[in-house]
Structure formats: structure tokens, C-alpha cells
Image (cartoon, rainbow, N blue to C red; front, side, top):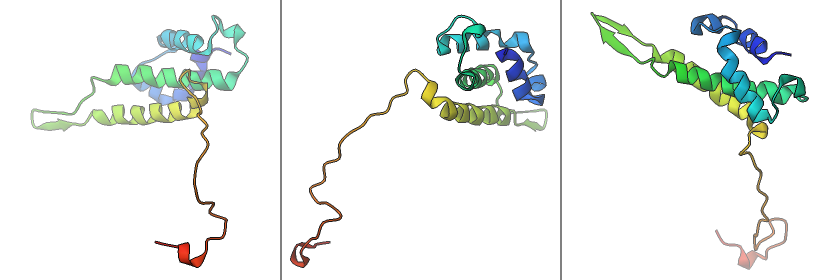
Length: 130
């Protein structure tokens, strides 16, 4: 499986809008391999993890390339180019949420709750206050 091919297919027509080909995604593939913790695609064993990390890096690259897309007015026309950036930003946030368990800074903390009143225990009427 080649990640660049998968990501170009995943982007669909958006790849043409970004003017991307498989060779445009060399850095995305390298960053994804690094995040995954291997040197070569042949060493990848969890394709779900690999694709999820690839999508995060893909949308990150798109955000960088589209950061210059801003709204402006000229010659009586108004151009709203930031919509493209906002759409990519939403896709990036979605990709991060889907890949959260695979990201290096992900952690779950467990704490014991201390509540002096058990919500299931009987409380005498005189002790009940609002």
C-alpha cells in the first residue's frame, strides 16, 4: 500500500484544486512514517493507524499551503478565498479527532472521585437541603 496514492484518491477533485500529485505528498508520507515510528512503508502493520496519521499530515500540509488564501476586494469585486482554508481547517480538526488515539501526546488520566455523599444512600429528611 502506498500512502500517497491512497491520499490522492481520498482527496478526489480537491487534489486537482490544490494542484497535487503523488509526488507532492512525499513530505506527508515521510512525516507519517516518522509519526508511525517506522522507516519504510513495508514495515507498517496497522493500516488504520497509518491512514489516520496520514490524513492528519495531509490536512496540515494543506493548511500551510492555503494560509495565504484571504478575502480581499479589488476593482469593484470581492473575493472570498478564505472559505477554502476554513473547509480544510475543519477537515484537519476532524482528522485529528479521528487519529487522536494514535498521536504521540494522547493520554488518558484516571482519577478517583471523592464525594462525601453517596447519591444512592438514604439521607434523612432533616438533612436534606437545597
